Image (cartoon, rainbow, N blue to C red; front, side):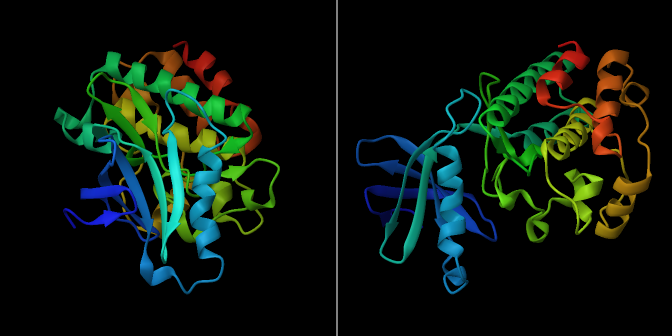
Length: 268
């Protein structure tokens, strides 16, 4: 892979491997480091796959926020479909948690991360975009503590029919109860729930369930009430714990209406 070239970019190494596309660290002809995503070639024969791949570029082109990954370019190069984004020098939130004792990031840093995430997703929502795949591995943290939201590959424009559930790429651990229903819709309150699960893990060092089995996780989302965050981690304030519990209500209408309301309830 090293020294391979795509158009004006030289590939330096692999950043991530996915079923839809692989992401590479690359350098432009001008010497700038970038993240280059290429559609996996074994998918070329699927109907509409190239349009679906470039959907992320279309979404990112609508967004301009310091905590959301910047789109730099997108193009075809022979048979290849390419999206070029800013390169973030850091680690994702999942990796950062795993690097700490008991997976617990210091509470002051956690609150800083939460504030940045809420601001980014509120901005996207106000621009008419739902992320639909909120989870720690999609949040990059650089050396200064700055957060960058990544992977808008299954994001949706709010007034578009595509907000229907994307079951084939559902991140089960962070999905709201209604997203397991054929009649359900992935709306703002579904993203609030996903954020609630991510914050639960961020503030406690663990998910609110103790299984990796998909069917058991789905049942938990539908039926189980999580232990309050401040009972798992006593350094968390009752106000933050109560807000996360509200975000994790089973009925969408019982959750916050947007990320700003979530932030205000947390008092951060």
